Length: 226
Image: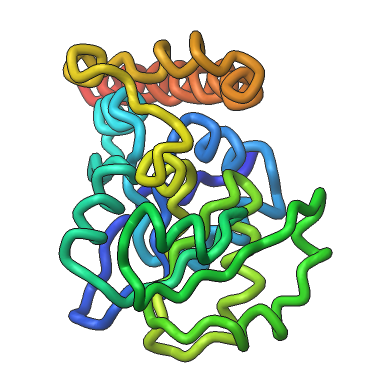
């Protein structure tokens, strides 16, 4: 079983991070089971917990993690910045019209089954911003960032932002405020988009079995000390 990298959440200097990710159960499950994905996320300097319950689970067994949902991060970033790049399935016209930021650097990405089908060197030439949000879903976006980052300037930062762009553009709706407050937004999303969300839920049993094993070992080690 591969070592999860979610504890790598902060940078030890004032330099800009090279890459930032937001981990949910799907992300964490991929880090446990997918060797290629686990290797790819080594490029990320910061990995926040996007999901509250994943944050609680990891915190309870001693992981040094920070809870920061991707949609909230992206919304705050858009409020405070006018120059950044968005790489997603949406066109320049769609994003400009909704976000109303004319200086955005938008790169429309075609759908591919395998990230190796992208021409990363050519795509990198279309990116003219230092802050780059990649929104093509986990695990593709993390693998994409791992591949393209070698062609980008050293001061560029890539963000694996997932569905945050869809929320900002109104393509997907966030759960009602009361559902968000109760921290059960994942259940609401499962009900409104079952087919899409069910793929992510396949990772939940993997993460929970890993957690139970870690918790059992932690309790066992405590007993041995006494």
